[in-house]
Length: 224
Image 1 (cartoon, rainbow, N blue to C red):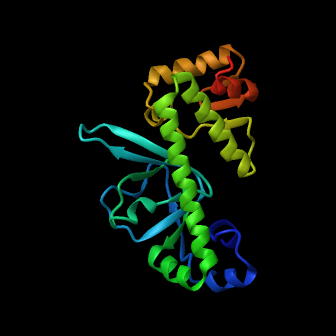
Image 2 (cartoon, one colour; image 1 turned 45 degrees about the vertical axis):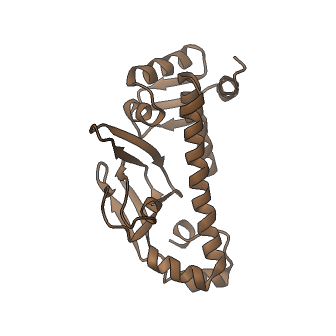
C-alpha cells in the first residue's frame, strides 16, 4: 500500500507521519461498475492501483463523451474539488482497485507536511498538462494524427509503469477511443487498418503490437 498509494518523493520520516492517516481503504471496482457519478458528493480522491477506468460526461442531447482513460498511478476525482460534486462518471473498463484518499485528511496533512501538499499540486499539474494535450489533439490534428498521438501517449504511459511499450491489450473499445478523440467509430477502425497495411502496427481484435513506433512518431510530426 505504501509503495502503490502514498505519494513518491517524500522522506521516510514524512511517510511515517502520513502512512496510517492518509490512505484508509483499498476499494475494488468490478468491470462496468461506477466509482463515482456526475452529481455525487465529493469527499475523496482516488489513485488507481490496478485496472483501467474511463471518465464520461453526458451532453445536453444525451450523448456520452469520453473525457479520459486512467490507469495505475493516475489520480481521479479532482473534478469535484471546486463545487463539492463530481462532474463526470468514472467507470471501470476491467476489474480494478483504487486507493481511497479522504480529501479532508489530505488537506489537514498538507498543512502539516508541506512536501505532501507540493507533491499533490504536482500531480494535479500533470492532469492539467494531459488535458491541454487532448485539446491539441482535437483542435489541430487530422484523424490519423489523433490516433497516432493516442497510441504513442498510451505506450509512453505503459512504459513509465514498467509494462511493454510495443505490445498491449486495449481495455477500451474503438467506439470509446473515437469518443475520446472526437472521431467516428468507422474512422478509428479505418485508421487502424491503414496503419496495419502500412506496417506501423499489427492489430488482432484488442491486441495491438506497435511494429514501427518511429513511423508513428514521424506521422505525428508531419514527416510523411
